[in-house]
Length: 160
Picture 1 (cartoon, helix red, strand yellow):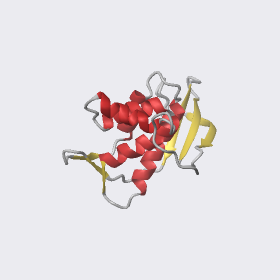
Picture 2 (cartoon, rainbow, N blue to C red):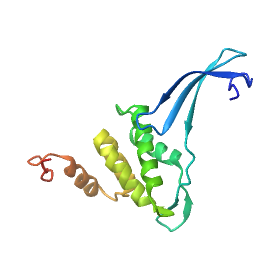
Picture 3 (tube, rainbow, N blue to C red):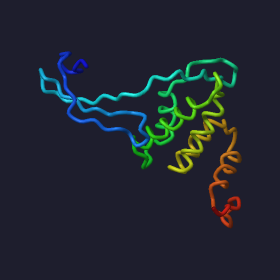
Picture 4 (cartoon, helix red, strand yellow):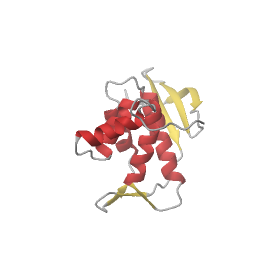
């Protein structure tokens, strides 16, 4: 592995850890030349399906787009980078587990909303407002009412 600081090729691993789900290995490395430290991630290369957009265009699945959308929704919210990465990992896993060669962007958006709802309700509503293309304040308010407990204008909550 080439050092990102000095470009030397002699580096060694000083620590390795698997992610919680076991799909990614994080490695801390040190350069033998400049003694700089850096982190690498190792994961299985997968053939991910194509994403079908609303206008029927098709494009390669891009995890970065998921991460960017979640980051925008979570801006100035108490959501850690680790939580954002975990959501993106879960979405990528859901996409890769499908047997179909294509997945609709609407399905990906629905999965992201489901995950964000559990992490941060403000980020969830922000993401939903873009994903569902709210046209007016009433659509926005309807989504908010769905988050409120029953008796406060929300829908009845089921007991688990």
